[in-house]
Amino acid sequence: SDRINSILVPQTFMDFTNKSFRDFKPKGSSRLIVLVENPYSDVFQNFLKDNGYELSTGRLIGGEIASMIRSLITAVAAIGFLIVLLSVLVFVLNFQLIVSKSSRDIGLMMQLGYKQNQIAQILKKHLLSIFGIVLLLTIVFFTITRYFIVTWFAQQGMTLGNIHWVVFVAALLFSALFVFINFSTIQKSIKKLS
Image (cartoon, rainbow, N blue to C red):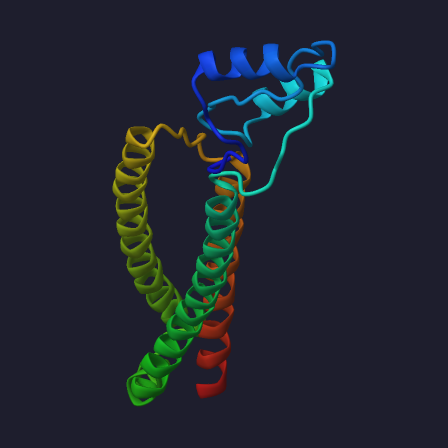
């Protein structure tokens, strides 16, 4: 806690007052002030639980910070999710625009004997190259940013764990869904022109 509800006096004063005014038997200590790095750590919480100790949680340093960080992470995650949805929409609209702008050329190619699948394959390869570049840049940016964040937290005395495997699975599933949605959009747009 960042407060001590006591008055600190010299030991000689305590000895004098205990000798002069004592009408009770000494009971021993009933409270203990402990300085720990993280009062919310699992190791410290388990130690308290195993020994039957209680923690005065009033105004613990770090409690407000922990709840603020949780709120901040939730807000950033929500904003990130919206940005991801908008990026999917931008990619879909981009390729619909490419198809609509190239409708005359696509029509000419079909008249020359090109099939819908051949034209769609060209657009799909273009999509995969753009998506691959964006994905690669994202991974590089994420790795560099995470390195600096982990280093900064380590300097503050906090350790961040490794990236959970669920994050990698979610990224793969999202990438597959993203490619599938764009491929089907390209295919539908080409079919409309034929």
